[in-house]
Image (cartoon, rainbow, N blue to C red; front, side, top):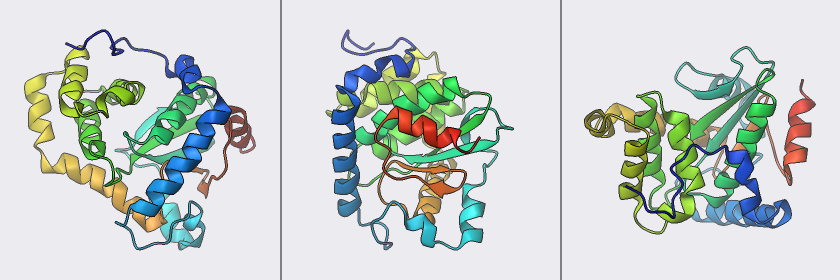
Length: 235
């Protein structure tokens, strides 16, 4: 099992937001990481720009951002506002936004539906593997608990013991490990992640996280208060 440096308990992520050393410092990291990896990831031919979705054919964009039956969601399925986020489990900026999403999904559970989609960058060693473990956990109804464990402990497993730590997460959640291994080998599981990634490319995404509120790309969020206010403006 994990040693004392890891957090196996089911933490409420918003209570850990202070670990980022303050919102101002965290947002400097967000901007730097998003810019750096947008420049480095060459898997998409579309220019680097978080607002690139605005140039995509509106009908195509609307179809991609429509909530699907296989989407991972938090909140009210009948909510008047939908927030779709494309994210990467190893990206430090995504870890920060995950904490804000967790807080707001609790505060606004009746009014907002939060949707998580995969966009694993090639620059990160464990991005795809983390997504695969989250998907496999989801097949045992534990996607969000695995999601939280992966993000909360990102600084630990990103050092090089990713797969071992992911397995320990799975054991801590009481997953059927034989079923987990079978699901990890299932091509359909990886294809599910790739489907999200390809849709993100069609939207023009290269930087993560990329967030859409009511189908509109969001830029320049510098605090949770701004994020909350933006979502509230659509209610």
